Image (cartoon, helix red, strand yellow):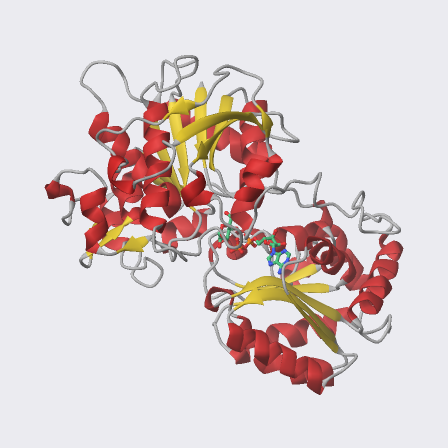
Length: 495
Ligand code: ADP
Ligand code: GLC
């Protein structure tokens, strides 16, 4: 079974969030599950710099045809777009890099629309995926094109549009990592996409008089998945459906949730290079050293008894961190410390910086993106806060579990599927792995935080929960097996 995996992020080449972690781990897991996997990526600077020349045919770049897709001729590009054959570092998987320097060779956040041409940039990515799905590479034609998030949403549509009666086209799977980011563009873009007029309508890509790439993916993919079973149910309702719940309900027969996994090579306290002394569930005493190192590194008072609560997050409305900011004073009053690493919305950044200024030595805030510090917090903190308003899967709580850093999370999406609240019953049964609150309010978060402090005051009970948490496994092999079963249901005769 040949699978083309299409995404925009792949750790360590390019990552803005969990999508990059998934892009790094799922393709090799699919290969291990028996698929012949290739990856299609846009040629952002980090990606072009990180890949090696391709080992497999094609040996030369594939020119992207002008035709029923985005109007290439009208773009006035200095060079025609092409797909460069490449090899991914680490996994050694074959990749195609969409090389259009004039559109992708820009530093900074890959989704920033500084030139106002994001619509055409990501339409080209979808077009490239569709062309490969229809046999652009004479050496390799996928059975399945697996697309991720709105950036790839036009691929299923272009594939359907171009498929000729007769030869089978590649099947398409569209995975939603976050329904809130939809790839909405002005109506004027539609004319540049090379699509028939009727597709700018309710059964096409039109969404409140705009073009929606997310809607294109949801409308035209053969199967839709999202990254946890609970989120797969939640997006069928108005509250989490972001205006697309009607379409999702209409297509609910092809919607399913497959929980993300963890790359335990990268995220494990047993061999994390940021740790002077590794630890595991049977050597938890060494976690104390990671805690002292973190406190020193972030300028917190080195107090072994303090419950250190960590945050590693994009600072956006999704993540519910205004709730944390509201309980920060109380957390310190209860004897805790707060270690925040994040970047995003300026008002939230400022609010956390003000909290740190109010409580020097007890609240530390690092604004920015810092991979080693993310690991140091995951290892050194006692608890990790994930109070998200919504969370399609969430990886930080899964990393927290592996590091014995107990998640304190809102019962929503993937958080609900992965953290077991510490109640009298779950503690007794040895099943508790963290603290979960139901209402999305400061009051509810405060309640969960108090319960965490109470348990933390009983080191033996706390250590028991840590050990249970650390033994949980969210394996990519499990997720890959579910994706392969899905692919097979679409291509019953492919090998
Ligand atoms: P999302 O993809 O919605 O941001 P996830 O929990 O799925 O949420 O994934 C977040 C990923 O991004 C994790 O790998 C986390 O460690 C990382 N991350 C988030 N913010 C930062 C930051 N400021 N510095 C380093 N890593 C970060
Ligand atoms: C998105 C979601 C997050 C998920 C990640 C990887 O960024 O916000 O919940 O874990 O994608 O699937």
